[in-house]
Length: 216
Image 1 (cartoon, rainbow, N blue to C red):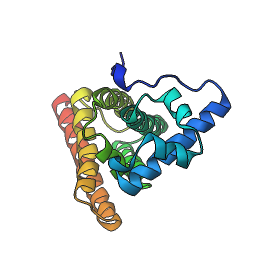
Image 2: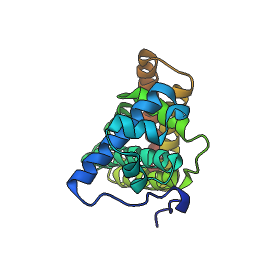
Image 3: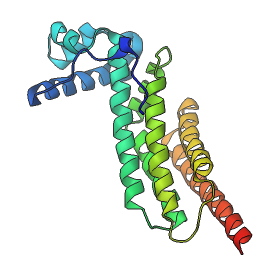
């Protein structure tokens, strides 16, 4: 069962018509621009409304306060990221372990770095926010699609999928987070990605090889 959003951070309502969805998209993009440009301190409902071209009253129809807006921004970001991971995992069912590993890492790094300023701003935005439910729900989806993909490998059998998937994803996610914390540039991140692929492929091949050896 998905973790529940804290009541104080829940949106007041969700868009039901196309026009409302467009309005909300404008609010989200304006919020991102303000976060990137000046951080959380720069983000106010008044500034967001002004940049998005909506009234403050419209803002309050959806978000009771700034924290709820920040929560929604992160929820939207993680939803898009989960969808990308699920898609790449599904498309690699039946592939080799090496291809699975490389595709997963390439997709995650690309998603995080294609708008690096946005990723960095969102990381900073949740410092004082209770985002445990968001992280838990994203992790559950990432775990589920990764385990299903690994279970379908054409060239190996992975033991203890739960633990192996956890180790793999923790390594990938942690590497990307640390890259942003260190303020690595694009070239350094690309070099890091190549090394993470080598390391994770070797790990998967090692655990699969150990299983095959025991079964012989």
